[in-house]
Image 1 (cartoon, rainbow, N blue to C red):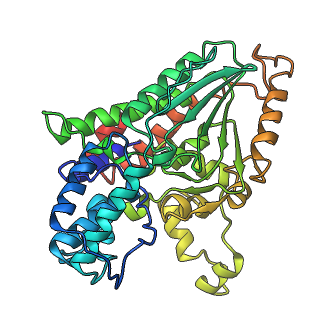
Image 2 (cartoon, rainbow, N blue to C red):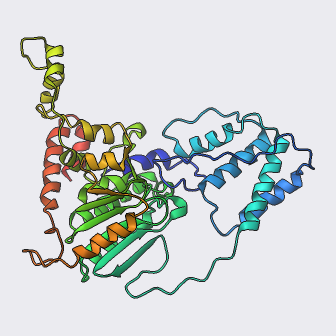
Length: 424
């Protein structure tokens, strides 16, 4: 639960060329419509300056891919081919910019200038004035990055940033907590989280780590750590069945939280990615506990034990090593492959490993899932007095405390400087 605190100090002092949607994904650049060998009149330096000024007047964010294209073309037009050293893996923003600029290769300055002007002109011509907002229906929180609706005894919380792949901002963390608190007290039976557009959620927005207060990045890290703990606690303590309707790819914290849901329905187009290891981060959302519990241990093969320890029936070195870590012969390879090594799972793989309840064809996903959820709300009250299919809440408070106890025993002797944080 310390990912936001870990990453902030490394990114805080770096200049950010807009939000990339998630610190866990660098967008792939589509092929640019470059004019190679064109004989038409070249764009002048004045045309380039006018185009730059026009971009500054845009009121609507054009999106991360467009901003990276504009950055790369401008650098190519003014400085030529990329001449900067490649940034490190953790410098996500500058690495994305470097990749975009390097992709242009030896494109001449004049051609890059012309492409920049043409791109700005085409985007400006295609832009339309925003349509007036529709009035909110009863039980609906209108507009914004998060949309909350209540209908048929179902409260639905929708990530509503499709242009940013539904990346979560700091304000959205606050809004989701408020929505969950309200849903816990209303007359709904189920609470559903889903996404608008192609993505379910792409994790944290990079702007979460660049808005540094006057007190410095340490204070930002401290407040973000508190926010993340409170955010996850809202899911742990939620008193009604929680359902994730995963309509598309899910990344980062939107995946690690799934272990705290009662049902996870996924489109066959969905993927599940937790690339913490390659970024030098630790997984949050209690996933280091819930994922091994859901996915289960992998038994050590007798063949492998025999090949490593001989025919005398002795334990393998791997088993002895794991026992020394307090794990005995239980090897949580499935969870480790995902959380430590960042393996991306398809919806079918996630279902087979226990992370997803059921997978539906994308063409019928919405219809089938919502028909089923509406049917669940009509079930009789369970023995606890709550309506719905699942007696809720499950005792996650116990799980959370157990996790803290296990972590404190395992981690404090090895990392005393983390002990105080865990104990607190």
